[in-house]
Length: 317
Image (cartoon, rainbow, N blue to C red; front, side, top):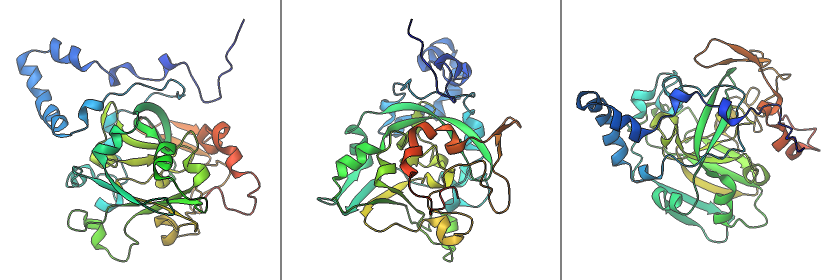
């Protein structure tokens, strides 16, 4: 008899999702009366205005499962870092000022041919899927998110990097007129992050375009962001407008601000504390519960080999 041995962080798919969080929209609309139905109209109007809304929800990739319930969307969107709009966690209202359509991504650097592509055209060239990922913040809290998007490997292949390219450098938008924190010029705007080519083409690296079965909310990094679940959350850059391939390792936003606390690699490790707090455990957002932190956030099976022979690097900060 064949017995599947699950990874330490896996559960059966039926145990992964809190059922109330994912509902059949048609059933809801059909089952509600006219008065109740009007409560959905503002949200539906916003969805209709998004030219990619018809792509959601995408089919779930059952290979990626969770060891905890999905974090409710309301908890996620109301406790979120998006520093361009302020340094508190309550920036959802401010982030609504971000215009996400039209949106263009520039791809350049060490590639065969630099190009620009509209976000709507990009998502038509890939196959969207949903993945359940854990997200671990360097501040020692965590959540579980149903991201929709596509493997970053597809974007790298589309770019056709030259053999000399070693890193993927990503930048977010720069517009102080709509992002008030960007008026503070002593910060190194625009937000910049990077991965090695090997990290960017790893199975886990995911370009996110949606969450919770619909297009990505602005406060979560609309219309396009990164998810690297084995790293601390600040590596998962939001609202990407530029992807460049380089031979030189970039200096990321937080690394340029305080390199003794926030390094380039930022892989999750319970045994390596932040200079000002322990990383041994994490608070699960919205629950008040704590769990032990897992090395590479529980994804070591996928990524540990990326860092063999790199003993001189500060991999866990």
